[in-house]
Length: 415
View (cartoon, rainbow, N blue to C red):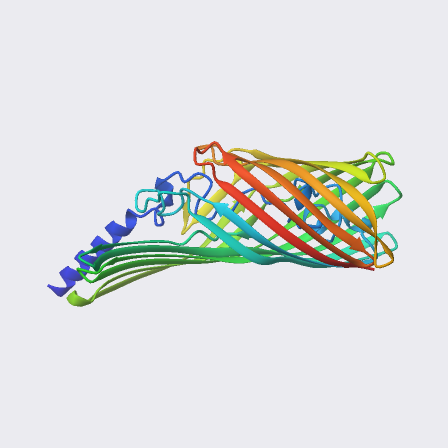
């Protein structure tokens, strides 16, 4: 009799959990925010620091202001001073609509949930000598956090049902880059990238009246390696052209799942654990950049990066997940004007930056894209640099007008 009861409870547990999107995401089309989706955008390429590109429409392929260039176009490194150190911190904000159990049939929200994150997201050093340059950097390139959501029902002042959701995670990139100046026209660079990260997701469903708790926890640890390369050509004294490439790679995942059904009144506690070695096949990416100096103080830049997301593959606990993705691109344009001033009896430069970018997301249904406006400024004083930049964007296509905002500050030393 007891064995029959345990089997019945196990079947009930599996039936309930099978209906949750978090367990069977292949049954739903979530759009931009699949469970493994980076926050804000799928189209991450390098890192837009306040010094490098954030204020200029995230244009980073043809101009280097700090050693974060190693992530986007390592060929830019020889243009940096002999020795440089750079730090970047940021605050990112994003609104979401449909993700996991939120607005997918389990929990419904009146407004778009929002999340804000602070991070020290970049640190790096570079050194140049005899036409060569090397850089060692560490960057937080992706975040998998989601807004925490919980709901509770009560009657006569007593709770009788509650459900909660929590997800967090990140991806770090450790990059070693080498670059070489060939004559006065060409610069080439190669980067070696080692990624590490993790993701955790928890859902808990409680029935207080029956004293039943159903919980599901997933933990993943990521690792991988890829190459990135770049080229910079000086066409004229005013015009530079850049080409970049990032190789495809597997983001490997050690996945663990823990399902639990607890009913203390009935003496039932069922635990189901699983483990799997999974992978997320990241497609290659390629881009071109341009820099044109209108005058000694004013220059304009443009970037275009192509992402063949139709080649993306996601494997989760041994199953190939449905990801109906299209090939996409990210385009940006910006300008920078350098204002000369005197600061504490020394010459200083104040860059004034503005830019715009268009960032099309890979899901076909619904098709969506972000249009972003950016701005920034800073100061160059002796061997110290300080920059601040911001980006504001709005999504179109999904019908929910998702918003993003990012502000960053960079501190550098140049010798």
